[in-house]
Length: 126
Image (cartoon, rainbow, N blue to C red; front, side, top):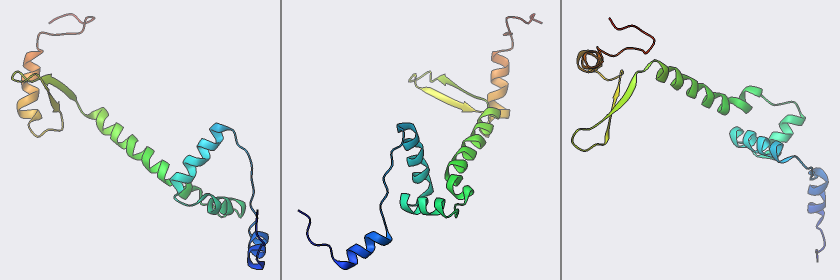
């Protein structure tokens, strides 16, 4: 049983009414992702939305920043030559990259020599 409401509680409820609404599951997940990325409470986010105080760049900045970081990494990885070879001693993979300091002087010449007789199936051997 609810006790008597104090005048301060009554005033608070009148000045800060609660609202309830339903969303589809997918829309709720999107809203949760936006709220999580914005780092502000849902009530503050909704207040900013209602008063047209939202900065679209701030709301999506975390997501845009993450996308930008991943795109930059993708560009770097696209230009990098990477491969692995099993270690002759233990069998675990040894990773090689064109970003290593000894790529041009040691690794690439050995690879070029090792694959000098290989060619595409559509190419004629020299």
